[in-house]
Image 1 (spheres, helix red, strand yellow):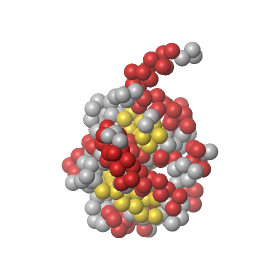
Image 2: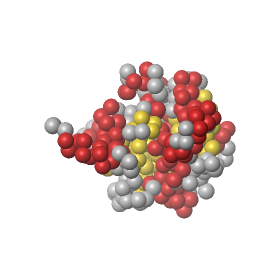
Image 3: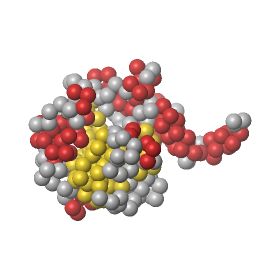
Length: 291
């Protein structure tokens, strides 16, 4: 069983400036909780029991958020605000641990994953990019299905979603013989970064969720710097394909790119409408707007 997940959170978040100048982009709130909490809850729902944050010295607020705050808890208890106390003490289940490792230099996603090598050991693991929120639509957790597929096929899994043909030049696009149905995987032949419109091998873009074997760490150690003079995870995946099958898993949920400002606003809208306490009033407020 895959029980470990890496979340690279060391990036500077330049797409979210000026807010990310002093607030980690992962801590910007979507309705009433930071974006990264949604990502961690997604991982926990898929059976992950250890979250490995690959972080930076400026991101201490992320670690603090998932730690206990006894002063706050005592204050809430004394004021008999038990609903709030329950919320802050049950952000993650007691069986889930969060550990942090530092990425000393911004050398790319592949390097960030490699920084967690000693914690991963010889186990397969998941990687979740915290910029992207994945919202279940069918009631099924896509990451959970990816993990199940990995355990059945022992093939690395790359989550993908269909994008409009006129937008393929904005994404990494997987090369597959045919597009799988949602919730299924198919062997892929490669990944093409931002192909020209009309030349893309498919319309399936990489989402930011991976299930990988431990051997990818050895490949990353020998991966030279690529695009942007950084160690790219996609280059290591390409090396893995030389000896192993890598599959594209087509998700059935919906994604929100919270690394971009419009994607963030879209996420706030969707999650706000479905909030158990605020949703109805939020929906009414939107209807009352004179747009």
